[in-house]
Length: 119
Image (tube, rainbow, N blue to C red; front, side, top):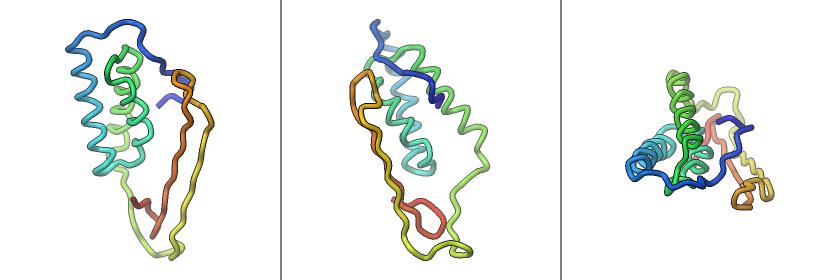
């Protein structure tokens, strides 16, 4: 996702078929994020906030995620104890009120074991 893009609420009312299409795309990305691509979880959850009234900017952001997925189809998560710490590692980050449209903070965490992220 373009980090410089500021996604804001849509001031106009989206058509019912546009909303349905957007929600279908979000659902597909949510499945991928949970099943095999945890690296897109943050952006998918962020885009899901606009599922009730998406704009063209939101749709462009989703298409950008699909483009990223197409370009990284051969990449994946591997787990190996070779040259990795045998201990569980955890990382955490927070950003206070970073989403200006709804004034909410963003937090995130990841745990790594055997060189790969775990849930």
